[in-house]
Image 1 (cartoon, one colour):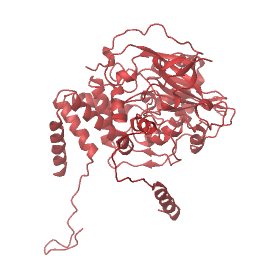
Image 2 (image 1 turned 30 degrees about the vertical axis):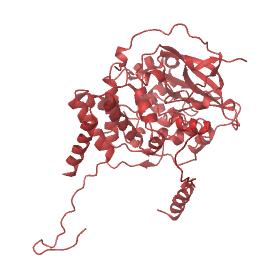
Image 3 (image 1 turned 180 degrees about the horizontal axis):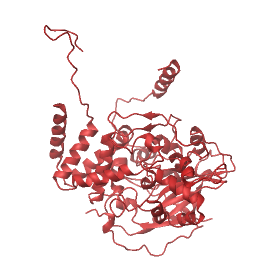
Image 4 (image 1 turned 60 degrees about the horizontal axis):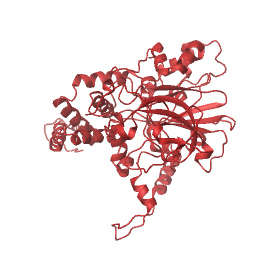
Length: 107
Length: 141
Length: 249
């Protein structure tokens, strides 16, 4: 039974795995039926820019599945790392990601 | 329409014609991995795909579009679905052809209708009979 | 149309019958809504209440927030600390109209502060997520696959099409609102606005400035785009493109 926000239990995700400033790589899990992790950031290394909130992942919520809560982050990428032809050094993109889609980047 | 506008429209039409490879045997036994990935790629994930500069415009909202938005949000408010499910249905489950071809709010209301049938709140027969009734109601005017 | 005259009709043409054109989508929406009400899934009053909220929102609220942030550094600090809470100071409650936020807009606003060396521009590449409580309904171009494909990869080209060209030293930062945060740009206050009142400042902070496709400047009080007219438009004040430019709410 889908719940609305008023009924959402106030669980917690526990300690966030990443800190602001950490270098993280976006995982590239098989892309089937639904995801909110965009093709253009998969496999790319970015930097944690901010914490946002804790919530279930969209791949669960879209199917009315009560998943565990996860920390969400804003991750910042250099445009030059995303697109081979990008000519400007300073430009960036930020997107938001739940924790399970991120792993530490080995530098 | 001015001559320049006519020329531009004609150029756009010519540019929209694309050759297609037609194979008489139109059933696949196998799919190469990149083609499989392309077929199952969630349609809404378009960031970075190629597209051309076009004239961006505002659009005056139709009454049915406002009503659709409100109907979909009220269904969410009352716990029938959440917005993530709405996006999954309207922006992905419809498939690529409908995703690109159906107007924005048309996809919203199709998704809402399908959700109500999927979850057994209404039956499909009820829905199509109601659609026929609404059409007949408006035809009488 | 027939131009035949029959004897005794006084030579006047009969009026053409009024054909009410109804689209398949309009039929479907009416069908869904009536069935939902018949089955008790929601009430007509629920629909009316949410419609009232939808008609009450518009970009004037965002303009007020920016103008106040420009003139009141302590308010700006509160906006950057907790934007949803700060919105209440300008009369916007992100919990409305349900008490727990709208199903699609959530309650996670983040304001993106521009500097002379950092320019933000917002897109939702996956759908069309937009901070409705603060800016009203999104413009049509923002929802198109065209904008969503191109802005994240060719931002400077797309901005140039809006008439905005930025030097290479300025960092153009695209914010892809792909989850539950909603974003709004706080532009740099332009020169030539010293000693302006909040009302005067709000006049030049248009919706396009708060998406990041335009810069505010004295004398620029409207976002000008061609308008595709509706066949049967909303019978209400809040959804015309002209209303998007109003700052009188």
